[in-house]
Image (cartoon, rainbow, N blue to C red):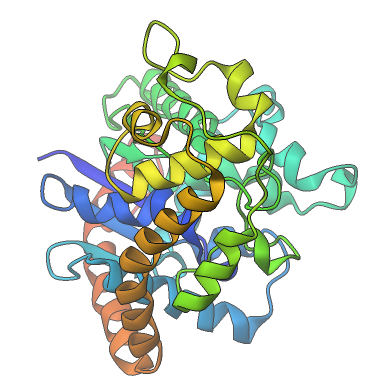
Length: 342
């Protein structure tokens, strides 16, 4: 059976982008794949984290997994730091990856900005740890958003170089799984920016635990433009929204993509349905859909967070299962490299 590995960082309030871009897809995949879902707390500490907040946010991500419908019996759910093999394999991959490859990683440049000299080495080496996360379990497929495609390409490069250097076929070369509408949800205040928990404005995002009136207020005040919604005439011959059209009206297409994802539809279908509609009407319909989808999940998340003992038990059991999967593969790596094991 094909195997999936993926994870979510415990770096702040979970929002609609986390749900549509990752967690919802995890739920759908668990029926057809052997699934391993991680709370990637080692990745989180590439930037400073308050220790108490890191613990609570790790539980929050776990609660989101469970509330959204991931079954901890059929899938493995754990936090990354509880399986030391992730860090060990990451060091080995640091010795496989080339500096030229790492220098091409655009996400480091985006996160470090003008202060690259002050950034942690961990932030720079983050992609090698991501490769270790995936290959430690010989995952064959990885659900990724557009912003992570480059890191998965690096993972593929590392797998191929390791196999080539040692004349083995130890690691599979994993394939990406990229989903449809709203795989990259944008800010409600600026359609050119990714929706993010680090944005200082809470109005820029819909949190997974927001109450109905808060969701309604955020969508009502979401930035738009004075024109009515476009129709299917904007689509190119392949049925896609051209880049120039999306860049001209980023907020409009962001809301259309969110609606399409929540409705499990497509942007062309939504364009057909709402062509010429004023934003006031569309926002009301989108609000109803968002509340109906996120309301039950948010309520269950709050219930689970209030029961940390249960959440910790899920993580503890998942870590035991993950370690049992990881150790034999790590030993294969040791033997391949030539590490002496007594």
